[in-house]
Length: 125
Image 1 (cartoon, helix red, strand yellow):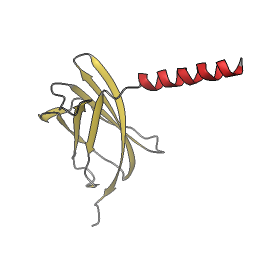
Image 2: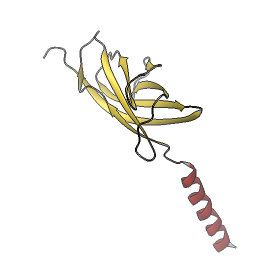
Image 3: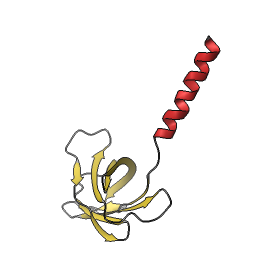
């Protein structure tokens, strides 16, 4: 009985791992530093699973600072500036480590992923 349970659990893990398919590949480009009260440009390159640019998608980004509970920064309507490249403006208040939660709607095919990055203030430099 235990051997059958082991195989059943193993099969379930394999099936669940396959369900988490990588429909999109993301490349997040953020500035290394920011100036307080100045906009910072964020770029996201979105590719399909075959490596081709995803054009015409709706892309939203929510930036959340690690270990902090002050307001998040949202970029609701990223603009496509090149094939598969989406650009938006963020207003950083603090330097630190951030998580970018990226939501993609490609003709009804919805996907959410995360990328992490760090940014420092160039104030006083």
